Image (tube, rainbow, N blue to C red; front, side, top):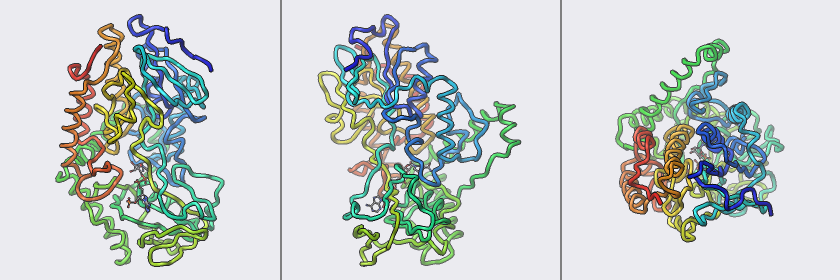
Amino acid sequence: MTTAQSPSAGHGRNGSSRFVIIGAGMSGILSAIKLREAGLHDFAIYEKADRLGGTWRDNTYPGLACDVPSHLYCYSFAPNPDWSHRFASGAEIQSYFEAVARRLGIDRLIQYGKEVRRCTFSDGRWKIELADGSTDVADFVIAATGVLRDPAYPDIPGLETFAGPALHTARWDHRVTTAGRRIGIVGTGSSAIQVVSALVSEAAELVLFQRTPQWIMAQENPPYTPAERDDFRIHPEKMAELRADIARAFADGFSNAVVDAYSPQLQAIHEACVANLENSVRDPELREKLRPNYRAGCKRLIMSDDFYEAIQRPNARLVTEAIAGIEPGGVRTADGRLHALDVLVLATGFRVDRFVRPMQVSGRCGARLDDVWKEGPFAYLAITVPAFPNFFMLNGPNGPVGNFSLIDVAELQLGYILQLVEQVRAGSCREVSVSPTAMRRFEDERRQAAASTIWQSGCKSWYLDPHGVPIAWPWTFDRFREEMRAPRLVDFELR
Ligand code: NAP
């Protein structure tokens, strides 16, 4: 067993605070950049995989792209004049994070193949235990472990008996040939819609198994011309302007609207989705099968300018009969029909209640995060949990996931966290944790506000917890930005 840092090493008061950052995805890289910028150089970044990038490393399925415009979906301090399209592909986003980490010298600081198994708070510091037996000790932990990380596999009888390859979208195997094959896709979320559009032209047959139809918003994805990209390079202020414009439009037109189920913006989005369906799907029977019976925005809104075209191709088939089981030869539906397949794609989403888990986190007096979260994960402002001092999450539970660019969310949260860290470093305390009273008040208000959001307007989705309460930030993004400006110290215990 190796020990990277002895338990007796310094604490904040003497200016030598040590940080452990868990994860080297978008928010882990960001944490390292911002800690260094703040003059805090004593940190380790542990990454369990052999490459940085988080969700953009793990998701490589055909057609993967981000539905937040690229000039917004990047770090505010690292604009990229070279985005190829309004909405970049997953591979391009992964290259962006690698390039930023390389350019700012973060990549060489990342310790790869280092999975953190346990964090234990003891004697005012965090003991970190890794899967390889090594340990570390830190004053502060920043858990940058991601949100949509662990694939959810469907509980369909016989899944394991399928004779061909069965791929989850988040674990694509590029050795599998899809061209000329009969491909079955389970699911109709953002991942499925992109895969369908990407694979239909090369598949012998594509069968989409739909349990619930989705509203789809038409979304063009024009390329940036070489002249536009040169212009961005020469005039970075134009990129900044574009970013600000997109952010404002995104906030006003969507993020601030989804939290009010009766907002005019949501009504306009619904009408645009209905028009898209009416105008794009020619066969009335297929059109009705694709028409959801809930309001647009209730499930995560899907953006696509080619899905309806893809599902109307002669080699594509939409199956709305429930799946009864999977057999070696394909998928059997409840009407008794066997849909013969060579490749099965599971676009069945993620386990969204994991956050830092399966890592074991024990706080003050041995409080186990697993026990504290037994009714479901929660965190004050999606960052911190009582009795877990100096332990901060980026994009933790109940944050504005889905409402905005998670990069902006993480940047704002990190600014907030650094202000809390400063309390310790300035000597006002050694431990900072949200008070149980503030946590309870926040949870009560959050649950109450959640009732007016579009997510609770009559559909099932990953936005709902097992009791049907929306798990995402239920207020406007503007309010989130405001909250992140400065911690209300009365809500914290500074010991
Ligand atoms: P998802 O939205 O959770 O969709 C999962 C799909 O699988 C749903 O259609 C669900 O049906 C279906 N499903 C699950 N279990 C099933 C079963 N046993 N039998 C039949 N169908 C089953 O997952 P996702 O598409 O991976 O997207 C998750 C989130 O990732 C998105 O909402 C988004 O936030 C993010 N994402 C974003 C992008 C982008 O930027 N464009 C792309 C991909 C993902 P029901 O609807 O009936 O439950």
